[in-house]
Length: 192
Image (cartoon, rainbow, N blue to C red):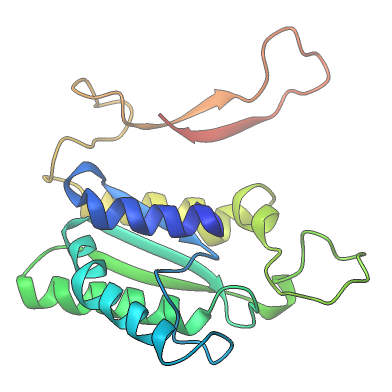
């Protein structure tokens, strides 16, 4: 999920960790914030309670991946760093095989979605380079595939596409548009 969807990905991972092989949050956030831009100390207490009582549940998920720009002004890089560190610490403490990883987007890509807009830069515009353009393989899809390959073998029944028979949860290529669309012949990878 991206932004609020990244928040939702963390929330779903906290509430149903046995359901997922991976949680991916891009430009996401948790409950509350430790940011000085929010009302403190209340927001900080909410955030630290979220870390201690909810985020630790994600240690049961094989892959927890966060992608965030350090200079993002709308959702705190520091908060996401704390979330990933908390999940990693809990996984180590409990002997779980979870890999919790934070991938940092380069600062020059933080506003890459709308580079021509003259409004104040929020550094929160990196949806396209993370999910859809040529950089997406480098920052998300290759990383996610590698982590799943390394960390889900023997756990649950996730298997590469050519071996999967149990569940319809697999990675594969699929045409982006229907066959009658003659103007677009691209393919993309999709989680089904």
